[in-house]
Length: 389
Image (cartoon, rainbow, N blue to C red; front, side):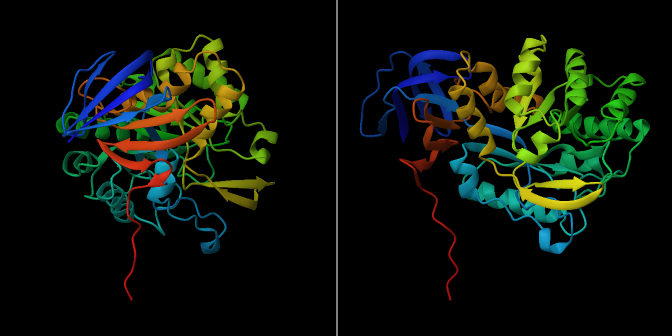
């Protein structure tokens, strides 16, 4: 069966204007102003002038839950397939994060594979906050070579009291092991680095790169919008070729404490001359958003995947005249940084991960992943899991 989408304003993420898009066998077969194709095997969909976007590539999620500061009663919940789909995230990348004791890579792997079976194209990182890293096979490089969904390592924590305070030499070794495995497996193998509130900021990362042959894009620091000082350091790292990630999930308390909202961080980066291709946005879905006062935990919320869609809506409300950098930071940029060549774009040969979005209302009613509709007219097409008694 072929799907022909008519009358769509395509943002690939580069704006292409009004186009037709042909989907065949899970891939985009053609993008053109006129596609002459008829027959019973062709399903046609009139987009009605809505935006056709690539599915979001969310480079930091916790599908099996993350965090858990403050005891077992604070364990964050799993992120459901429905939550990802309704948020437009067709390619979530899963990480353990803080808790590699109450949770495991085996549990994360099971969550990722469950999302895949039900229609999403999910991937995962080996490792966690801790160094030496936890792994599936006993070795980072072996995880990348032998475990297909594993595409990198992370999120490794620096400048954070919950991390193991890795030295520059340990970070360098970790990136080298990941790079070796990725080279053998034909993957990208980037190391996702959680940057906490510590005064060291990106210092350990810059020191790891200074005395090595590793390129700057071996690491992807995330939460770079945690405060203004960290943001400015991240701009400098991006000017040397690194990809920097801004977290879209936040709370009023975080902003009051100095966090720069992700959209503001992105606009600041562009104003400062940072290459837009070096900027990504992620949701941290399933992760905990802990609030500490004087070193004591006093509150916690859970991040959700809808933060990316909310940021796009905010950009439109604020009159951002060029949405391409915002869209690219959710689609083509993370796909490129992670080595997912068929993700994050609308072009012949790319995976048919597509969103139909109405910029006037902010509604996302249609989501396709690999050529299959997971959401149509705001109705999930995936049958919920039921337990027979």
